Amino acid sequence: MPVTRPPIEGGAVAVRAGVITAVAPAREISGDRVEDLGDVVLVPGFVNAHTHFELSHLAGRISTDRGYVPWVEGLARVLRAGGDAGPLVGEAVRSAVRQSLAAGVTTVGDITRRPESVRPLLAKSALRVVSFGEVLGIGRLRAEFLAKLTAAIDSTAATDGLRIGLSPHAPYTVEPDGLRLCARRAREAALPLCIHVAETPDEEAFTTARVGPLREYLERLGVWDDAVPCPGLRPVELLSACGLLGPRTLLAHANYVSDDDIRRIAEAGASVAYCPRTHAAFGHPPHRFRDMLAAGIPVCIGTDSLASNPSLSVLDELRHLHRVHPDVPASTLLAMGTCHGAQALDWNTRVGSLEPGEDADFVLVTRAADGPADPVANVLASTTSPRATHVFGEPVAS
Ligand SMILES: [Zn+2]
Image 1 (spheres, rainbow, N blue to C red):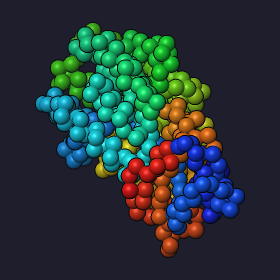
Image 2 (spheres, rainbow, N blue to C red):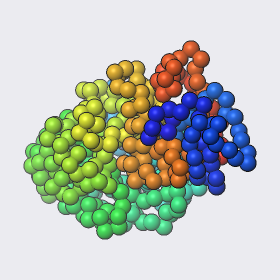
Image 3 (tube, protein in one colour):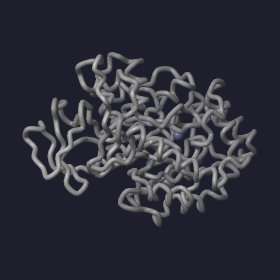
């Protein structure tokens, strides 16, 4: 499944020095060493465009049953009580890397508040990564904003496989001046940006009038102070006004958006990371990913963290979508889980499809004998885990 073109029955991928040199029917390809992979569907490595590896040790610890604000408040309390201690974070990240590769994920957009601990671990892994350093700056958090911003975009740990990005956390945790500064710093250093936006219906009350459950949450947390300015704009309008919407911007969630928001996002060339099972766990109304795709927005897939989602598998997310939206073509879903994510993370010249010149990252999924004839539908209808994941043409997990 090259993704960029129709499936090739009996296809083969030629690899030299970790890079794809040809994708064609097997009879048209020759090589020094030929390996028959059996009756499998070969898909590009999946791209998990939005996750938080450092929260992986919180799997099952914080309930999503009562909605988003109680969940994020529970998360903040666990982290403040030592849930972000170095050894916990280290093991969380190592475990997340293993789980991702086993699930066929080879590229991730990972959010971190601990860049100094997390990035060296990611740099050693087989994953391609955009490591978005996350910053918060509202009320009493304002004082540490600049220092956190400097650490977030420190490029010391960057490698061929690890790129640095910046993530102002959300419109309810960073003030407008901070959002503007993030936009400027990202532009100056040509860094990709990621921000959580319109994740809950409460965000609009907060950004337009500084009222509602998110204001109360910040007060309970002891973060609120009376110097917090009120932009009086809806969340997506606010991002636009602060210069944050552009082709290198990835919007996480965008669960509550108007037609006007979708138009704005599309015109700016920004991407959206939809996190299907986390979205479902919080009971949000149906996501407008189809309207976004129709508007030309590259909608990609994120698992979000294990603190709100059962696995770090993009394939599991796609299978969930395939069950819930059987009318969406399987090939569209696969594109969301591969090439759209690569585009959103600016890795699309290297990964996201099986094309000559790209890194030989691919995943082997056993074809179900009793499943649909269409290879993508077959993969999405089955429940089997990937048989192997290859990075630079070599197996890294099986
Ligand atoms: Zn997130």
